[in-house]
Amino acid sequence: TFSKVGTIGPESEGVSFHAKVVGCAVSIEKETAGGTVRAADMVVGDETGCVLVTATGDQIDVLEPGRSVTLRSARVRMQDGHVRLVVDQWGSLERLEPGLTCEVDLDNNRSLPVWEGAKGSVGAAGVGQPGGVHGREGR
Image 1 (cartoon, rainbow, N blue to C red):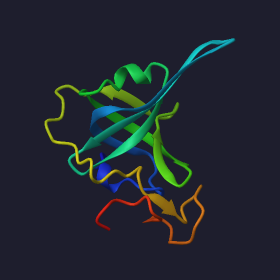
Image 2: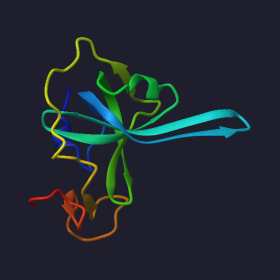
Image 3: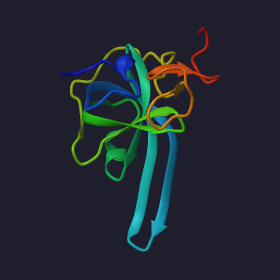
Image 4: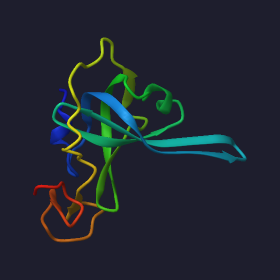
């Protein structure tokens, strides 16, 4: 079953959805004794919202801005109270053809709010409730 990005929260599990890649928020490339390590936080979304996906290695090549992708069984990883999605060994990430034609809703950024009370978060606003000063404007 495919979800919409706007429904993703800290308690989401095994998230699968179609999305359009908006861009790269952060990218690093580091030389190690074992070779080059690449990681990037990519913004992806659909007409209901957007979210950060932490990609590594060859996943970064699939997440090219402007391209549409399918994520299956992505895992929510909380980072300082913020939602991030990770596609690990139990998930998959692939190109979607034909691509999505919708406009991505950047105002509903599921990674922007601080989700207080969620696993990996500090606070007591209630599990799955955005709180703090980093919530969306207009709340």
